[in-house]
Amino acid sequence: MTRVDTISRAWGTKLSRSGAANQTPPADADEVSWGDPERTGTAYDFRSDAITTPSLRQLAAISRATLNDDVFGEDRATAQLERHMAAVCGSDAAAFVISGTMANQLALGALLGHQRAGAVGPRGVLADASAHVVNFEAGGLAALSGATVLPVQPTNGLYLTVADVMEHAKLPLTDCPTRIVSLENTVHGNVIPIRELRALKEWASSRGVLVHIDGARAWHAVASKKGTSGGTLADIAACADAMTLSFAKGIGAPIGAVVVGSAAVIRRVKRLRQSIGGGVRKMGVLAAAAREALLENFGPENVGVRGVFGHAHDMAAAVSRMWTDRGGRLSRPTETNMVWLDLASAGVTADALNQMGIQSGILLAGPRIVLHYQICSKALASLEQVFERILVHRQLEADAGPNGFAVRSKACV
Ligand SMILES: *Cc1c(COP(=O)(O)O)cnc(C)c1O
Image 1 (cartoon, rainbow, N blue to C red):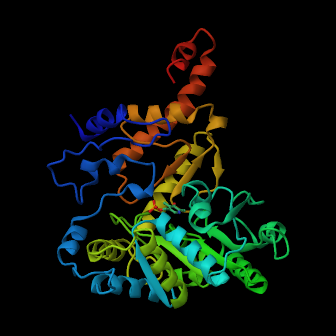
Image 2 (spheres, helix red, strand yellow):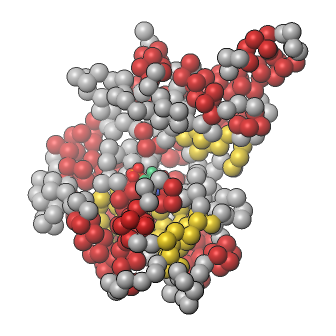
Image 3 (cartoon, helix red, strand yellow):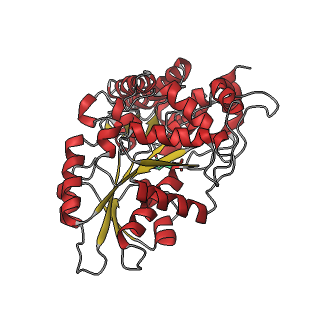
């Protein structure tokens, strides 16, 4: 049996309605999976760029990790990674944490506490209505920071602009003043132009509002073909009072994220991190793998030099063409590693698409196709087959009329 067969068999019965895996992955527990995206199945998995399989070099880096206590602030590998990230982002300081979600919650909590100097008061966070901090962080902003979220739909359909923020922000004297504007970059694969970020930061500073950037995928903004319009990591971080980055979104680390900001903000982040049990003793184990992944896949500077992101973006452009050349429409432009299919206009549901993917040995999660450097050419060919089936065969079937093959096959799509 081929690897594709194994994966489709193993995953086929294990997908929840959203397409998310909910059980053990197909790799055998007693085999080494590090560095083997075929074995883990990530080579065939388009659901997220968080799906990557860490490399053997990362495993080797773990074996060389320093093993001091990071709760005591004594671990050299962790401190080295934090200094490195602060330097490439042009920030004073950085805190390594275990997930992007934790990084966002701590960054927002630290900014709210920082601004209020410990006082309890109404605090509003204005964010894109589709942001991770609004939808996928389990209400953490309310629970952990006592903040009210003001979700705003971007007028341009892509990202929040200074005009959107000016229109919706609630300034002091109203009941819940906007203390923070929270932005995502990239946002669902789209890059916020650096000139827009600068305008936003300038407006916010003039009003005493702080800016948080969820840069889980800031790497992608920097490596985007849009080139310098997205800025460097330091350009982006300069527009934020705290920025977060994830080592698991296209960088390929097993675990890890970072918050960068001023020394005072990072001190607060570390205190909050301890309060929720995010202080980790042998943090060097995680930091060593994250640092290796960063150097392997992004490079040592504040722009990606390893070509890994460019490769993922080229694959995304190719996938977009596979879809649009067959008459498919996109719901967002493809600028980095995500392709957004307009499924409604293609007459297919997300569930049907996911099922067709499984039948072709690939994993999909509805309209968002995510490319990462471990996707293999066989997976791309399978994806093309799925597109062909949706856009070309269905059209041929429809043309065949009510007595043709169309009526019979529709039932099984
Ligand atoms: C994935 C992601 C996060 C959270 O990262 P985790 O490490 O999965 O907790 C935050 N923001 C954005 C935009 C993300 O895509």
